[in-house]
Each structure stands twice: as structure tokens, then as C-alpha cells.
Image (tube, rainbow, N blue to C red; front, side, top):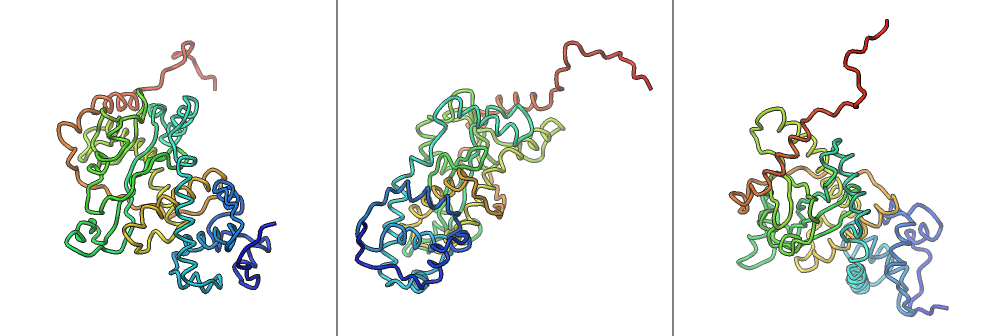
Length: 346
């Protein structure tokens, strides 16, 4: 039987609701199934301290409400230094299980499921070789002091770091790269991210969808972007329409994550932000996996102007995009036994 140095205060309302079997979403933004899966993944078998259940709930409450440590301390009737220690400890434990929940499709069958999903999202089979959608999201931080502080000011004039993420057709994140200052262009962040430098994903024959702030590439990774305005002709307009329907899943994923975990709107410390955001990504994927959905606030599309990759290199994927455009614009093939001269009897 577990022995803890400190006993749970059963009179705390938030714990009364949790142990009383009530809905956990209002307090923790996660359903009971998602909390249970997190607990199992962490394999917390500590036999001392406050206990794994209480520590996990403290962390989830802080993450969901974005409250100050002082507020969380009062809600759980715990010492303030303890809350600070618990939050940082559980963040490290959650980040440690990142490979278990954030990973590329592991088999050809899983990859095909992703491609079929994007074909349904885009409403056209031409996008059946889509392996994900990529975009960047700004996370507000405390503006660092010193001469480099201005580097964190983004285009919307608040200090931030950028989360670059790739998601699948369900809005589950399959790759993340977080930490660059908010003033850095999305295209530059992509160029310095492992998915670009290693070129291991997507596999040959597949591509990622991205907005107009990225270059259209084929090497070292296949990246298909929409045609830039002004769009010429109906074929390019039709392609952009289907491309947008498929790509906006990444904006929905960011919106769902930010709606669920309000703390990422707070001004957290620069060095702590990447860990917190990574934890949010993992918990988001757990929720997607168990069907725990919330009404999301869709991220506003913030297309950046062409970046440093835009130029000769940005046209390396133009031929592939043109082929997809032709496929989107082509008429569907008629059945071989179709009779064009059949008469309709009234």
C-alpha cells in the first residue's frame, strides 16, 4: 500500500469533484479516459510525496487554466514552492514520453490511411499522396531582457517563440520543432528543422501541404504550396480551393490545442516554453486518440510574405504542383460501358 509523506485534503472542491466521479473537463480540460492514458504512460509508481495522481492533477489544472502558481496553490491547498516543483517535475516526465505519442506513420498501411484521410479532407483523390500538413504557431512568452529581446517580437508585435508542427488528417501532431524567436520567418525555421535537414519524411512519392509563406519544394522534402495571388485561370483557382480544404487541418489542430490548454497564451519564461508546448502537444495527441474533443478556436491564417527560401529553390516543386493541378482539373473518367447516346424515356 502506498505511503505518502503528505495526505490529500479531501475537502478541496476540485478534488471532491474528481474523486466524486464528476466530469473532469471543466477543471482539467481532459476527460477521464485521457487522464487515465496519461497516468499509464507516465508509469508513475512513486511511493512517497504527494502521490502521482495528485501531482498529475495539479499539473493538468495549471496547464488548463493558465493560472499563476499562487492560484493553483490556493485551489489545491498546497504550499506554493511545492506547486512550482510539481509542475516542473511532471512537465519533464511528460516530455520524456514524446516518442510514444508524436511520431511519423510507422508502416505503409498507416501512411496510406493518412493519404486517404487528406484526400477526403481536400475532397479530391489528387491529394491521396499527402503525408501531412505543416505550419507555424506563435506562443507568447515573457520578453527576454538584453540586446536580443527584440528578436522575439513577431509580426503582431508581441514576444513569442514559434512552434512548427506537422499533423495528420485527424489533427494529430506527427512532428514538432519549437523554440525559434517570433521574428524568424517560417521558411527559415523550416530550413533549420530536422525534418528539412535530415530529409527522412515524407517518403518518396508523398508530399506535405503548406501555406503560401513556405516555398514550393521537391527536395530535400516535398512541400506543395498554393499558387500565389493573383491566381491565373480556373485550374489554379480550383487547385487552391482543394489545397486549402486539406491544409486547414493544421490550423484546426493549433486551435484545438490552444483552446484546451490556455497556459500557452500566458507569458511563460523563454527557457520553459519549449517543454510546456511539447507537453501540450503530447496531451493533445492523447485526446485525439481517445476522441476527447473540444470546440476549437480556429487559428487565424497569418500567411507570411515569401521568405529566404523563396526564389529559384522555391520552384523545385512547381512541376509536381502543376501535375496535381492538371489532375484536379481533369474530367473524371467515364465507365467503359457508358452510353453517350442513351435516350431518356419520359
